[in-house]
Image (tube, rainbow, N blue to C red):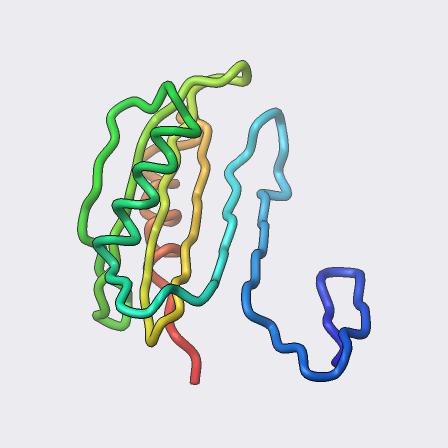
Length: 142
């Protein structure tokens, strides 16, 4: 099976299937830190709920990012009406303050997360709705 990623591909041995996918996107307009999206899909353990997976994400973030500020966990509604959870927090870096959003959507044993990292100066009345609209567009495919 030929597996492609951006400008690369390789031939996986027979019998292999794609189990997990990670995709990174960064704004083409870069002057220092720029907004970025990381999309990840992976299978979950049997019986996992969206709430238990979000709890794990928050615990992992708290352990990894010691200086989390203003963490929140809220329900999120996608354009197709399905529900997800949104974890948000702020953090300070050498490049300046950032805001991170971790969106979780669970569907038939597959978890999809989108991590949106935005320099706080890039968040304003014009950009924030565009970022949230992009997150809300996440949907399942047949």
